[in-house]
Length: 243
Length: 258
Image (cartoon, rainbow over all chains, first blue to last red; front, side, top):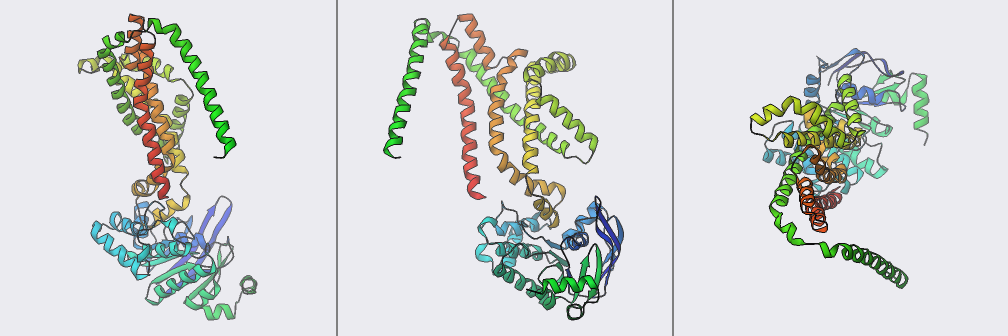
């Protein structure tokens, strides 16, 4: 994927969540956003995913400018996938229905095809036995995996993951991260924000360190983790890597 | 239940039974001699017709209140601030004034002068139609607030997730928000519908010949006492109890699912 972000700004009240962010990625399979909480990772991800409109600045994704009208944004969201920290699934629908419903009403598949596709998505990640369970009957890790299955069931151009494992315990975190790695290896374009530095180092092609609404550093993981150039990044890494 | 609570329960049951028995004996002792159930039987057709009208009003106003409730909900969530404010003001006005006033004012001052003639010309019972409309508006105002509470109780992440999978605004409501919100407000809605059935009795003030109106006429014409009021209470219970039971049943069913 190719990404071109130029002086992107977004304010919430007096808080500058994005303070003129610029970012240029020529080609990357997996772009990882790291940095302190409240630094703007989520907001950037939400803008890139078409869930938030910026106050100013431009974004080019794979050579096309990001949509601005509601209808275009909806179409853009339909072509991508987005996963939040938690509560992604619709609690009143079974795992299977969570996947098949969007395939039906958003992507226009007939019910039988939607069901087949949904089952295929679940079985791809070893979740078929949970197909008829409600989200409340699944563990947090299983819920996130179903969420990812839903997002990739319609072959998204880019998969956006906003701290997908922040609400999970270490064991569940591992099962979700494994799945994401698997997807990346199969060629899925992914942009994710995470606090799992080990994972970022292992899977990402490019890592962007974001703090105070700006991109402080953008480099390959080997480079960034070994030789952080900026002072903030160095301090952040030394803190999070200490334990 | 252990021995002590068993004895306490028994004692309470006996106490309550004695008190009620005493009250009933007193009332029936005073009225029993004059109670003549054949009077009620004589008027059975009027009462039956009135009951059917009440049933009809209840169903029509139930449907009407759902329509108005949804309109008020959407109005309050409109992106236009003027629409939101107007809805808010109207809802406050409706909820803070008695239904009796709405019926009298709405019928005699607003609707009767406007639409009575055309309705009558078209062969409609203008009192009935306007009464149902006013009742629907009143209950719809409450329903709108109940629905708003339900919709706003759904976490923000659900709206976001729904948008993220590509649902249109309509689809977000239809497939994600309403199914969850309705479960939460079901008990409140059932309570409202029971109120609606009971409130329909107030339509007598604008002369709608519903169950209360016909029963009252029967009572004043035949000097009936118990034989008028007992069927009146039972007639409303027959309508309200199924609604209450249905809501308990639905509540239980959905509780297991979430």
